[in-house]
Length: 442
Figure 1 (cartoon, rainbow, N blue to C red):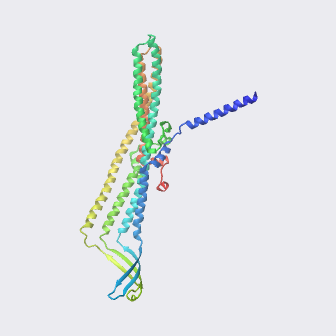
Figure 2 (tube, rainbow, N blue to C red; figure 1 turned 120 degrees about the vertical axis):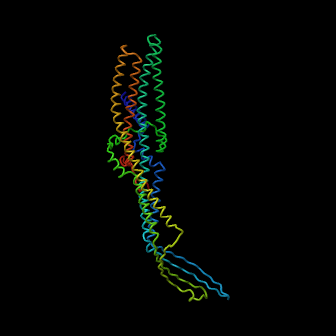
């Protein structure tokens, strides 16, 4: 008897463990915002394209710096000269030459500095690609959570009306309630169904976007985690001057434009330096090996050293045309910075205004939601006592549900404003701790 009882207990424990394990396996794994951003950075070609652009600019810089070093060349040639007689001259020539540009009055230096600025600009562009991906993922992430909360509210509201519909169906069949009352409830359910379809479509659209961004094809909305705690804790900057200062300090686009301006300035300096002469030093040694009966005095070993000074006197006004081109490019680079700052000022004003409106609206909507909930509860009790009509109850439930939607919308508007402010300052990846350096990409 004891053995049977012991076996039953063991079987129960094993079944319980199997059930718990199966439940753990079937439970969807939650993906946090940072995890989704990291997946998107690994999946999106735009980030890899920007990375390889940093490698290309690194190669351009190394190519520009190679002009500072001398060149060493070796060549070998065999010659044969047929004489009028039956004899012929044959020789093998080995030549080693060294060439070095002593000075070009700033052309090489300007080229190197321009390549350095372009390389720095590519690093900012790489960081920008990460920030852009993080911004898109964050927007979808917040929208998905918003639509999930709204859909949950719709499901709860539909449950209330369906319960009411069942009750009225019994009352109508017994002749206590009117058919019109039943229709009113059904109209409310249909309205909720319509909203559910609309928000489900919006949720699906954001999920398609998030799957495309991250490459996680099997990702479901249930696996998208709750809003990131860091976004909740972030203190929105409402000081316009401080915000502009942050943009000038961190914004990737602004620094890319600065590097482009510096590169354009160096290109202009290099074009002006081309009016000066270039001084080159070259040396070569020729080692001859006459063959057969060839006269060795004809092919002697020799060494040469040459200092060459070259200056262009006229090239069809090419230099003046180049001057016009590079000076115009430099002016354009300065104007692009001014244009960016004007747009940034508009973005700052607009963003601060939207956040302030969302914050104030949330307070009002939250108060409205609480009042509407209390009103609806009172109307439901008074309806049961016969003090309120069905139309009054449905009207109060409609006000309650609309205040719920408005509260959710304003709450997420604040979160999205915080995310976009971090994105405008190019600090979203750093704040969330997901930024990568070009070395990490390797």
